[in-house]
Length: 169
Image 1 (tube, rainbow, N blue to C red):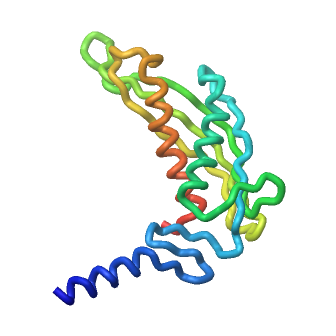
Image 2 (tube, rainbow, N blue to C red):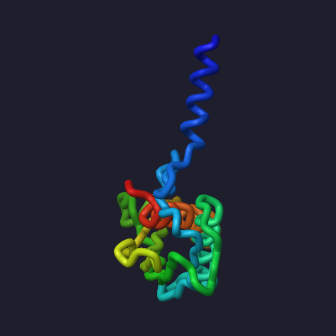
Image 3 (cartoon, rainbow, N blue to C red):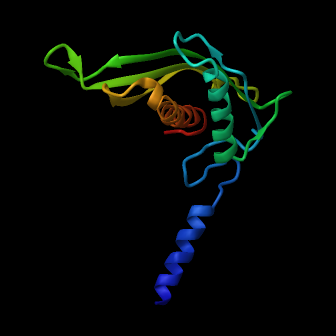
């Protein structure tokens, strides 16, 4: 019984421990200690057929992801790290052909071009495309699943961007 409590104490201390200068946590986030603020610029929408608010919605989703999952504070005037970008593509394609030239599944794909820069360390930046998709039955109209599809895609895209910027995986 005593070993169990020692194990629990050890486990909880490991999961909450922060290591000095590199900002490492159990989740794998690696933000230098001198990086305290971030900024997400308004993304641009260059994607045909995309909803008019998609760029603003994506910018807000990325801001929220960073706010929720890091210790960084939003700062629009002199941030330590910055994200800028563009919604490059928003398209629906047929993915599961069936006999008779029809499709069983359609796929909504969103592609973003992201530029990440650090005002503390010029070598820490990147310019990269990120994409993700949402499959839905071909018998269903995109308009009826679009909100859920975009939300699911944004969840994965923001995770991928966050990981590219703040983890060493």
